[in-house]
Image (tube, rainbow, N blue to C red):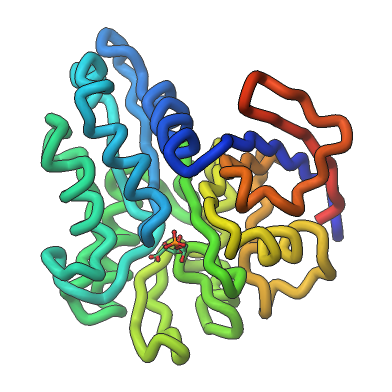
Length: 268
Ligand code: 6PG
């Protein structure tokens, strides 16, 4: 049954401005040092988040170092490779962020890509149940969940026409991706949709057409898995550079200096 989904777009002039804005978005979601609250944030891999993570780990954010105690970091997905492999999302995050900030090791919830895929998925599911203190069929609700979008419309490791698209009971699954001839570990889309805030971080001209097709084209989630992302909150946030936003409607947009924003309601 389709229902309304609010799409919030924030468009930045270039990739550097996008990364800085995304880092600010991220850091403001971490509770103040005197708070007893924690933020449970899940990040994606790939290349787009790298610049944001580097900004987070840079001097500019050193004043926030005291906040790191209040952050628990998770991954949306992982490649089935060792943590020191150049393909590892954890390795990318370690180089860009973890090596530079005092995040307590117990606050880093790594997907163990070095294990047999089904074992890694089962162990991460247990990690989620334990760290979120879930009972029964409860689903974890991340405070913030950052997604990317592939040129084929995949997100997380939910690739077109793969088995993970049908996983609705599990929290985490191993997913074989034939076109990559590789295994991945991924959160399932029902878990992603339970996050309090779901943000797509997308940059580059090569993503403009697929983003437009996912958002405004015919519904075909088997072919365009990013269409499965419909947060229970009813809102989906997009942090984009101008190039990726080339086909996002600007009617009714607001301009804030070099940045523009727009809100569009769709039936999803
Ligand atoms: C991964 C990511 C994946 C990524 C998209 C976009 O493990 O690769 O989780 O879903 O977000 O493929 O990747 P880029 O940012 O490299 O374009």
